[in-house]
Image (cartoon, rainbow over all chains, first blue to last red):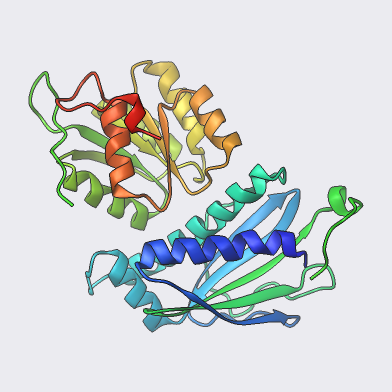
Length: 165
Length: 145
């Protein structure tokens, strides 16, 4: 996992969550996962292709997702499950999109897919090329998790001076 | 924050907007913002193809268009829209705000670009700028980033 790929996602999540949820966030546990991913509740996945390939999963337990959706809907506590899912997808979209903006402006070019609700119990397993980094963000609405697994595609692998995490 | 209502100078009616985004959540939030600006939501579409059909039918004053969408993405949709309706005013609203995308969107017919998460005051000023010749309280370019 390359730190220069990960940092924009951390910065982006921090900024987007703070702006969207109206309060500062704190980064909690950070861990590398090499085993298959098990979602914690409502999860949205964005896949990435281009100079970088991989995926980002944005995940939170159901109660946190409901609180976040209610907050973002302006205090509407009766959000449907569809709206809750859509809220998590849109948060993922904004976080990944903002990170993409930063990386694109640094000369790394890739595209993202529209976010999809991640309903499987297992995600991509880690490999020696794509270990997943899992970060927890503490917010006043609960803990949100970002699970990132990505790598440079083969075209760029030979490029020098890449920092290893 | 209170905003002066955005109304057309020719008929005094609220500015009519078409919202194009594949996320129900994003559409709902944009609709709320537009209503707080005194605009009317003429319609919603969840992808570029639906947006083209809706535009032909509704002829809105303004289109707010996401970029990353299934079937037909936003920049391509904006280009097709402006090709058929040269007066169409399209504002891209996307989290993917890299210069490459912004330039592509502007070159292909969009009038402006707003980053997600959307700041209400920014969207308001952009709408006033893009509709400067059609509304009662336009904004001048120096007010818009």
